[in-house]
Amino acid sequence: MNGMKYDVVVVGAGIAGPIVARNVAKAGFSVLLIDKKPAIGTPKQCAEGISIKVFEKYDIPYDRRFINREIYGAKLYSPSGYELELRYKDVSGVILERKVFDKMLAYYAAKAGADVLARTEALDVIRKDGRVVGIKAKHEDEPIEIQADVIVAADGVESTIARKAGINTYAPPHEFDSSYEYEMLIEGYDPDLIHLWFGNEVAPRGYVWVFPKDEDRANVGIGINSDNPQTAKYYLDKWLKENNIPAKKLLEINVGVVPVGGFVKELVKDNVLVVGDAARQVNPMHGGGMAEAMGAGTIASKWIVKALEEENLALLKNYTTEWWETDGKRLEKVLKVRKVTEKLTDEDLDIFIQVLSGADTEKIAGGDYGEVIKALLKHPKVILSPRRIKLLRELL
Amino acid sequence: MPEKIRVVVNEDKCYLCGGCAGVCPTLAINVSPSRWEFFQDKCIYCRICITACPVGALSAEPLEVGE
Image 1 (tube, helix red, strand yellow):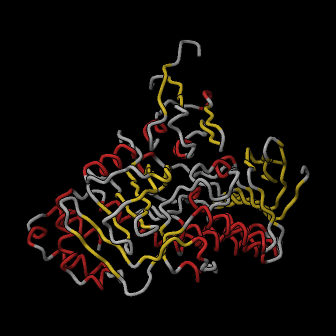
Image 2 (image 1 turned 90 degrees about the horizontal axis):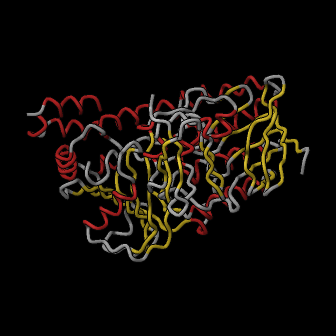
Image 3 (image 1 turned 135 degrees about the vertical axis):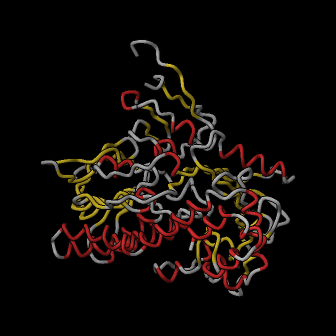
């Protein structure tokens, strides 16, 4: 297998990697997609919920083989039990089966012309005259060297190859979430909605989720700030116990760490690009990163194709510029909101969810948060609290 | 100076999720699908990995003099 040479090598076959590989292969360039796992997609580190919009937007088939369940909205629970239900008439999202989905994304890349190698771990970059010219990897126990004009680090939260290539992906410990999740049998929650519980005792800085995969089967998980002295597992087990939910039918256990607090500034260094979790391209509010990875992968692949077509690798830098002008700009705003919500006490959360449940939920569901905040600012318990007013004004 | 430590893994608890490698500021941990590896020479004793582990699989052992 030695002496491999491609236009592009992509490290990591999660979400971003296969999208890049597919798009670059479609344009006629040679590309190799590698993943360290023996089975692409397994194990997953994800609650598996995604917006219905991504299928059309990123040209992904709506294939029932990786769709567990269609979802019509969300239900939010405050610490004292106030509830806010956001229900749409149409399907708003789906709960995927990532094990199948990721493998299918890699399959689409392969069908478009990319080569794909599972159980192939990237170990380091190869440098020549100070420039990265490829990567050293290991397929099973066999060392391989892969030369490539462009290297894409889609290597997840670890971002090993991105970092070895000299891209600064550092984020402080507070800017990660630690997550723990059971796929289990659970009853009593509307299986057409996702369910989210908030509270500083429930899930510090994060939330508990129930994402239904079936009428009585769901991903039940938690994310908390990763610098919390207690573990994510501790908080999830505590929540299940306090709510008398038997955790006796556990089909799967997943864990992971999610970057939720800011995005890699320089997404390109010479001919190396970083995408997805490796670039910290995750929605800091809910910790989901699949749509963000698809977006970044699409922009990255566009500029890789242009750079190769025009034989000008300097064009790759435009990926950084375009991402920051589009998704980066949007996510910076979301991050600002998250940093405000992080300061909310349990009583704040109770008041906010209580007020919201009486407000025009159509507007909230439509994403009109300005109206919501204006409604909150009229609430007596908000008017009397300068701190709450200040927090809300920061959100406007 | 923080106390010099060696980070050790409880393999029965560890899911090989790679989160510790992700939060490590110095690439002192590598996680492959079959093994967890620690590189003492890179560790700066910050303990971020130990706190971040979602299941508490990591712990610290004091380093002996000369190690």
